[in-house]
Image (tube, rainbow, N blue to C red; front, side):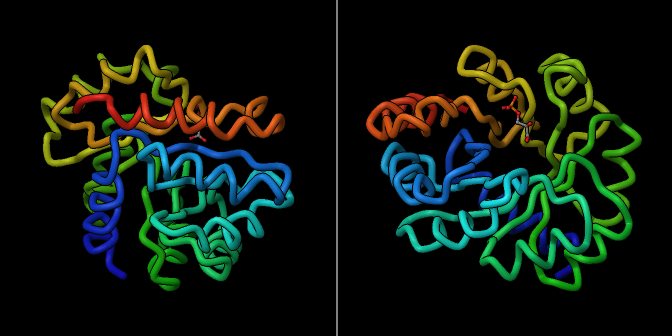
Length: 213
Ligand code: 3PG
């Protein structure tokens, strides 16, 4: 898959809802109910981070839930890309981008949302054909004002800002012309997953899904 085709696909996925939940799932038994709650609340695109031993099995399990589009986050190496693809991930997300990672996504046909925090990083990815990027770490890298500033010289790139995004600051990003959606872990708090508060997660998801953009 070419970078251009990858970005067409990730634009489609990021267009599904204003928020992509960033999920850190420790316990496999919580995977399906978490996905069901988020999807029922109106957030179909889910990013499962490869930060827990259960993550690949979580992707496999969540991929069976109707109505969802499950991707893998925290892709750092070609091995992560291969494992994510084998687990059934429909897209990949990385905090950054390396030659090896981009090549692996091409080889594996995994649409990638690569990360960038500066104009040079964004330009380098645009040069390769990516025009849909993750802005990471969004708040630490200057937040919505920084992303807005990036949009003036490079309006052809769209972003999914992630890292420190909350219900409170999400509208600032979603108001920008170069922001398609935001990513965040706030929609599925660890404590609510651990306590099995599925209706609470569905409520948060519904509020997030109703954010205007
Ligand atoms: C990511 O993995 O993209 C971010 O770490 C998620 O950031 P958050 O926990 O601040 O939402």
